[in-house]
Structures are given as structure tokens and as C-alpha cells.
Length: 157
Image (cartoon, rainbow, N blue to C red; front, side):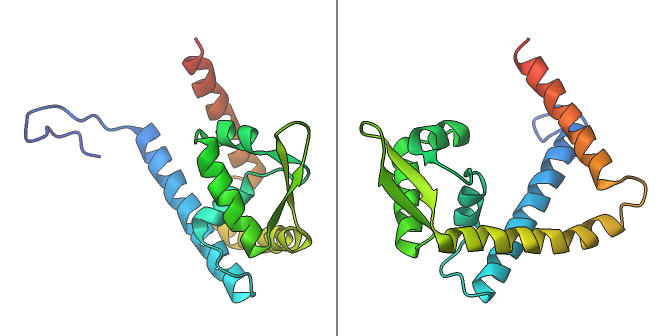
């Protein structure tokens, strides 16, 4: 983003935070697209980047629609629609839980899918981190976590 003025004369300051957000989002999008494509090549049916992103936030054990909706900041109806789609594809299953809540679990196929996704990510590690010789992956992750805490503290101050 430029430090020049807009057509309306409003100044636009340079921001490393903006560059960080844009770069992180672009990396996330590229990795998710790559994983989705490779998993489809391995035989996982109809796995779009958005479905893969949804699956990636689920716990390995029991999940509940209301918790997923809260974590993603979306409606329970949106979660229900996505879970139904993933159940039809054979990656998730719903089991009656306490009260009206349904437990959401990975099927065996879903667990293999996530295992294969992790394997592909491990293979990407070598590519991603061989060119970042000034920092180890753990150092980069630690610094990102420090940034997360700083923004979280600022948000709740």
C-alpha cells in the first residue's frame, strides 16, 4: 500500500502489519489450494479449499456445531450445512449427543484424509523453510505467537 494520497486527498500510510496480514493470507490460501488439489489427486472426492479449511479447525475427537460456529464466527446454520455436505462425502458423521446437540466426528475416511493432509504439510516444510535460513521454523512461529498475544492484549485493553 502506498504512502501517497488517494484521489480524494486522504493520506495512506505504509503499514508492515497490513503487509504481514496480506502475506499470511496469501500463504494460507496457496497452501490450502495446494493441499486440496493434491488430496483430490489422491482420490478424496470433492474436497474444495473451503471444505478443507473447515475440516482443519475440527478437533480429532468430539466436535459440536455451536462451538464450531463460535470459533469461526459464523451461524450454526452455516456449520450445519457444511457438516451435512462433509457427511455426504464420507468425511464426517453425526451422532446423537446429550439433549439436542449432535456430536460431530471424523469417519475413518476423514481421519485418513487429515493424516494425508498432515503428510503433505510435512513435505511442504522442507520447501518452505529451506529458504528461510535466517530463522528456524520454531522461531518464526514463536514470533508470530508473540504478535498474536500483543494484538489480543491490545484488543482487550
